[in-house]
Amino acid sequence: AADPVELQALLWWVVQPLAALWLVGSAMLVSRLLLEGFAAVGLVVGGMIIVVAAMFLLPPLIAFAAYFCLLHSFGHLIDLSVSGDGPWRQWTLRQWTLRLWPATAGAIALGLAGWLALTYFAPHIERMHEALGRTIFWGLAALTVPHVLLHEAARRERRGS
Image 1 (cartoon, one colour):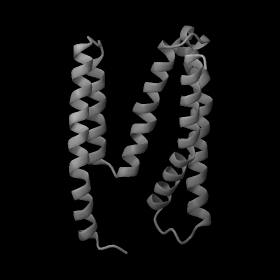
Image 2: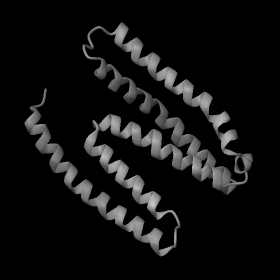
Image 3: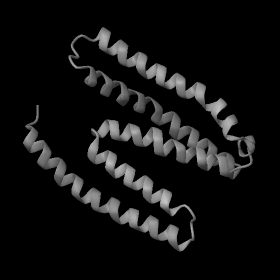
């Protein structure tokens, strides 16, 4: 029930310092990578540009979902493939694909089923994109805790604790 003009002014006031912090942090990260001779600095900068473009061009929830599913998850997979001593270090691209496609297809199917169910069983939601937005939000919320727990479990496993 907030006035959109007042809400926009408030959000702009909040976003400006956060954007400044993000820019400073990004510059620090790129500088550190350059100083350490990291070979894939261009990939990091490219990822940052994609994130910024998505945040400006897409609705916030869709932009975050795209970032999380496309950039963040691939970063974890790459990290997993080059670290530790698990069997995944020896997997070929085909083996990775064979192991990952069922979970990916299942997540897409569950998301679509949730969207369709919400659209069908919740007639008070008049627009399909509103149902899609809710489905994406619920899916991301449902993934957050398991994601953090798995990441922490993998970190502890690497440390041997």
